[in-house]
Image 1: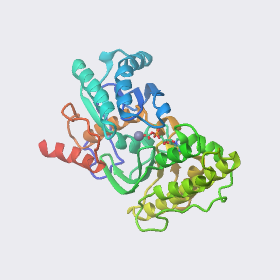
Image 2: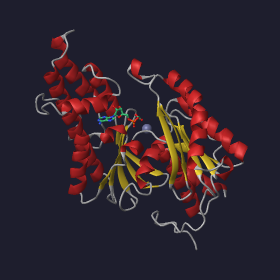
Image 3: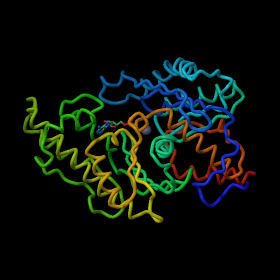
Image 4: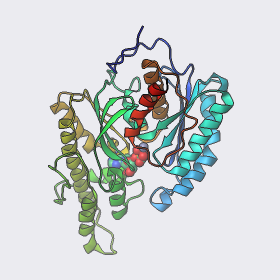
Amino acid sequence: MTPDRTDRNVFDGELLYPMGPILAIESSCDETACAILSAEGEVLAEKVISQEAHAAFGGVVPEIAARAHLALLPDLARKTVEASGLALHDLGAVAASTGPGLIGGLIVGANFGKGLAMALGKPFIAVNHIEAHALSARLPGVSKKNISFPFLLLLVSGGHCQCLAVEGVGDYRRLGGTIDDAAGEAFDKVAKMLGLGWPGGPQLEALAKEGNPAAFAFPRPLKGRAGCDFSFSGLKTALARQIEPYGNTALPRSVAADLSASFQQAVADVIEDRVRHAFAMMEPPPTTLVAAGGVAANGVLRASLTRIAAEHGVPFVAPPLRLCTDNAVMVGWAALEVCREARRLGLPMPDDRAVRPRPRWPLSDMRERFAMESESL
Ligand code: KG4
Ligand code: ZN
């Protein structure tokens, strides 16, 4: 049967790439993670270690992260293979986040993956970490109905804040992104100002439950502006100004709670406005609104996103938290999607041993993966 080259949602799937389960590695930030997925996308084993050494510094220290990945990864990979009940030679491929991210960790994960793939004589798939977030909602079982292209992705984490039109595997259009801080970064910095621990988002959300979201009239940066760029630094400064009068004295809990609730509401309002604009920028319209990244765990934000999706008559899907934050399951799934797309287009099984880890790796480059391979045929 000839693969359908026009409708990206159709796949005849009769011969699977890779020919066996895939071991996936994530090491682009401060999570060391491994997972094994069957070639059909069933999760056979997954393990993740969130590095704790960074908490004392109030943020991720790249050098510490790289050393920790190096110390943790070999044993974690071994334990993941054991937990899957498979032997190493049963694997059909190895994949790793190869960018964007902190270069030290990327080098550790990608080189470990390449070394193992070479030793096993199996292909290595270099996964773009943002692409992995983008496709994670399509993992079997995440939503009741399979999410088809095109869909609108809001990616909000400690390092990323952007809206993407996901038009197909390898085909991503950036609709807008942050011009200063990422959403999670803003949560973390504000939480630090309020004397909360790190990462701050979950603690700020918990404290906000005791506060009044209308207590402080914080700005809504870029709200109503054309496009869907984001900005959070002005909001952070506005909050710092409210704290100043307290000097070195501890903030009363009720004030900290009101500040948290008002800040959280401002962030949710801004994101709601930006996502409305993103909807208007997509033609054809998206089938689904998807949110991913750690901040997608936020209840107030989820409520806004559910409302916008309903207004547009599409479902809102946020993968479960363990798939929203950095994990290796999404890396394995993205690798399978890339392999399936290659198969659908009649291209050979990809092998990316020559792809170097990259701290920056724009999603627009992913379009070339299939175009280049088709030219070289
Ligand atoms: O995706 P993630 O685990 O790591 C990366 O940054 O890649 O996201 C972590 C970020 C942190 O900034 C954390 O404060 C934020 O997500 N976060 C939240 C919540 N849970 C995690 N922000 C707001 N509300 C939450 N409930
Ligand atoms: Zn991430």
